[in-house]
Image (cartoon, rainbow, N blue to C red; front, side):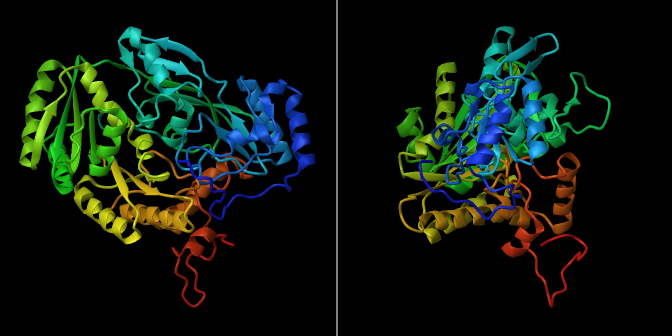
Length: 505
């Protein structure tokens, strides 16, 4: 996105002392006591590159940016912030799409870009131990000589970091068969707001203590700062074959998705793109997509040659039975990579059609896909905003791209409302408001739609157990009950509020 809008939903973050030159300089001086000058940024022109993550409609300049390169330095940064009651926001590559790494104007942005080393690869145990600033794709590149790779592959994998993947529980086109980040992480090391170094999980199947590893995946920097990650590696499959089916009706493509899973086949990847997304990707990547088709399915099967060939015929039968007008099989590895390049280029390619786009992220039951596609189309007409649909169709993860122009007065507000309705539609049909992008500041209102007050209170209780003073990424992910009441999720009749013992205002 290219829009330059400097606004944010009304936040829930507790604000520290008024940000000013004295506070900024005193903080910088404290950090310069143990960090080199190039690792402490506090001049406005130095702070500007850190004002937003991939959701650039929400922007803030932090008080100070610190760029440590050792765990000990991270611990000292956290201790100082705790002592001075300064909020801390952790940041990796800044490719997130929910505003989760957007800084606070009275807080410290803790950048982990210097934590970029692969510490160890064990091809026998099939594990890699890496720092959080290592790029997702770099793990697979380092493991390739051993015939191994790291399975989760977000579209931004060339740039996004493993620490950010853990924070948002990222997925990708191959997560249907191989799982999200949470299914591929064995151990995490995390620094708490107190500066304590904790370890969750282990390199074996079990570890002492409470099993909190899954809790840390998707915690969005609200419980601690991740400083080391151990992931499992998988052997490269003997063969991988990609089929591309074209449809003249989006509903038929949606039905084919359910049909493939119902047949007992779990593809390595099962992606769907509609007509607008197809045209964008083809113009951008020249990948060989059938321009003019209402939708395409990309279905990749991997494993041994015998099982892939058998499944390929069954998948083709399902696709043709669902109304596919053509089914094309990638002729070689180069064509397979080219077809996937088109899919992974869909987001930037959309920028050719409009000055700005807003990428949504929701998950629905696969059987409701045709219905949801139809309702999104109806809302698109209602708001007079085009939508390019790109889906991790196999696991029901939707990525509608709403096209708009931020320079038109009122268009961003209209776009934001449209996006909120899509997310609330996901909840309505039995899904969730996020599949892999996280909540951040983008979806915080919709948390009020998906969860009830007692559930939100439990979220706050978990947060308080790790960060009782609310200094870690405050105002993100979990809304206050006050926000939910103001958003309209709580009906109070004759001043009879439900659960009156819960703190609200």
